[in-house]
Length: 257
Image (cartoon, rainbow, N blue to C red; front, top):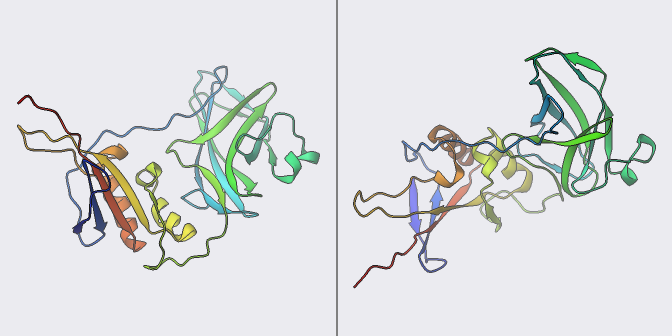
């Protein structure tokens, strides 16, 4: 592992480029959190999508995909599953569209075959969708007068992008913030690099130095991930021949003279 110190980007900030080598700092352990799943208050069924063809959730315009949806019955009795899935650009009107006039051709409607789910049971559904235009997308579950957004529990977003024109090598000038989902979803960072050709990522950390113990938080603390998850992400970044730029903010305390 090589750390190359560069000029500070702002006052009190230290920037280091982390070239993925043979090792990683061990022992990083932070309690993991999960992004909430939006659920209608009157529904005992909980829905979340667990995976898609591409772990990063990135697709090209006009590309087809299959989104796997987990449906869990949280009630004590059997519950009916019915309605339809509506997939389209985020923020677009999805409550009045019909199959014959599906959001001006950008919305996918998938009817759900009515079935029953036993108490405490769950089912997996494969939902075929199409990304028509570039932008962020959402999957909705509609039934009767209710509607809710089906989200990924790890925070992965479904996005259609324009086809990248650069090459996934050292000549690629692009750099982006490390997505939080990168440490929670196996295969995310490798797929992200392959889909976008972006291989350099920025990780922001705020280090408050403890003068008594002479310690600072571990690298990766801001991602709220375990050491195992962070190490797995670094392994994927190495496989993608990528780089991680560590941008460190060190708060400065005023002391009495």
